[in-house]
Length: 120
Picture (cartoon, rainbow, N blue to C red):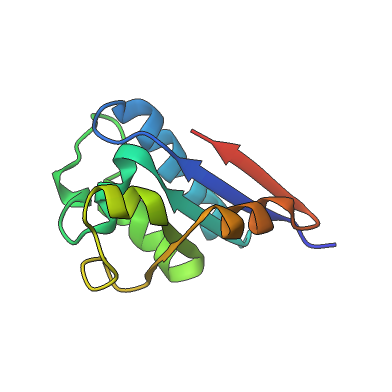
C-alpha cells in the first residue's frame, strides 16, 4: 500500500503562519517523494492566480512561490470550485497546472486507501 498526503489550506494572508505551514508540509512531502495533493480553499484560493504567491511574505519561511512550484512539479494543486466561483476565478485565470475541482474530488482523494488528509 502506498501512502499519499492530501493537504487542504483554508488560510491565506489572513493567517500567514497557518498558510505557510500548509504549503511547507505539502512541499516537503512532494520533495520526499510522497504523492501529494494541495487544495487551495478559502483565502488561499488567491494563490492559484499568477503573481499572488509572490506577494506573500512571512519572516523565516520559505517563499510561497518556491513551495507552490515544488508541489506543482511533483504533485497536484487544486483550487476549490466554490471558492473560485465566489472570487470570480475561472480556469483561464489560474497558474498552469492548477486544476479547479469540488468537494467530491476532495473526498475521493482523502478517502483513498493509504491517504492522510490534513487541514490547515
